Image (cartoon, helix red, strand yellow):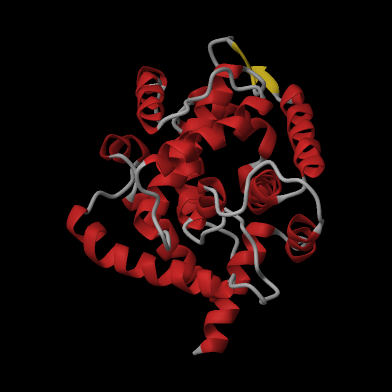
Length: 287
C-alpha cells in the first residue's frame, strides 16, 4: 500500500512541479537567508498543504471565465501543448515567493513581470488586452486566493480560523502588489467584494469551454495518475460557485459533492500530503 501511495504522490508531484521539481525544492527550502514570510504564518500553511492541488485546478477553472484573461492564455500559453509546463511554472513561482530566499523571490517576480509585458493581443471586437493590465492581474489574483482558501478550508490539514484568514489574504496580496496588482484585498470580506465586482464581465466563451474540457477530460497523464487526477478534478469542480456550472458545462451534484467527492478528495489529498512529508524526495509546496 505504501508503494502505491508513494508512486501516486510522486506522479502527481512531478506533473505539477515539473522534472526539475526536486532540484527546485532543494534550493527553495535549502538556501539560507531571509524570507518574505515567517515559517508557520498563514501563507506558508496554505501554500505548503496538499489542498493546493485542488485549489490550483479550481483557480484555473474560475479564471477561464474572464474573456480577456482566457484569450491571453489561449494565444500565448498553449494550454493544450504545455498545460503541465504552465502549471509547473505557476507552482514554482508560488513556492519561491512563499518559501524561498528573498532574492530568489524578487527574481521570480521580475521574471513574471517581463513575461506579462510580452503578452498582448486583441479581443474579437478589436479591444486590446495586456497581461500586465492591473485589472486583469487583479482577477487572476483574487481567483487564485479564493480558490486556495476554499480548498484549504475543505481539504487542508489545519484550516485557517479567525484572524489568520485575513492575514492569509493580506500576505498573498503582498506578492500580488509586487506583480502589479493595485490595492489587492487585505481581508476575506474585501476578497469577496472584489470577486463579486467582476461578475458582470465574466462569461463562458468558446475558448473557456475548450480549456475546461481539455483540463477535465483530456489531460496528458500516464495511466497510474489518471484516477487520482480525476478525483482532484471532481473535488475542484465541487468547490466551484453554483453560478459557474451551467456556463462552463460543469456538473452540479450537491449531495454527491458533499459526501462521496469530499471523501475521495480527502483521501487523494491525504495521499499527496503523505508523499510530500519531510524526508521524501518529492517533498514540495506546489499548487
